[in-house]
Length: 109
Length: 119
Image (cartoon, rainbow over all chains, first blue to last red; front, side, top):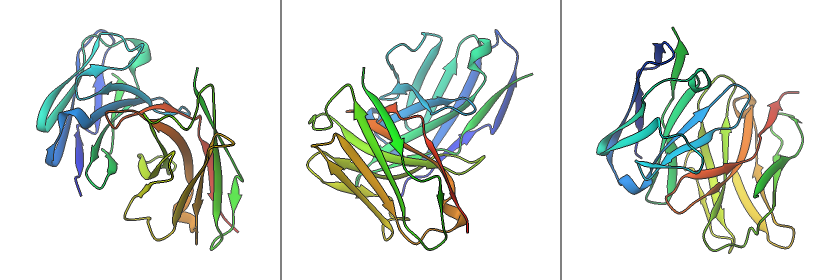
């Protein structure tokens, strides 16, 4: 089973700053099958990035994804007030099965 | 615009079976391009994939839940369903249904339904 570990657990930043979130896999993950989600309190997760670096429909270009193998990154270039939320990475692997990271909370400093 | 909506009891007794249905509107569940899945989130915790189904009926379950989970599809009603048996308090969570697109990501989600396991 592939385990996804996200860091940091919490990121305290101010609006306008750059956010860099990490997702590390216990085994190599196909880049085609790595996704990132945003979740706000009381809401369902929203798909931001699929295929490690492709933005989902309607996602602003301040969100970008990168990485390969076991190390993946979600970058928010300039934080907007609505970007403060919890972010999850997720991989789709063989079997098939899906696993999620434990999440990174981006909070207002 | 495709929408998903979960429905089912909000309260289930310990040892009983949790049953939820996801109704797909604005599109067909029989599309060959997609899988359909269930994901849950205990209060204050992260996301856990429960299982997925293809319109043909092929199913895939999280090994940690496999012995208790059944997911089925009813294409005539454009619905898929989740049954989780022998529930305990640890199964208390918000349960989401979602569509899985070609890259393995869940691109459309229902709003979620809270299920509490308690006597």
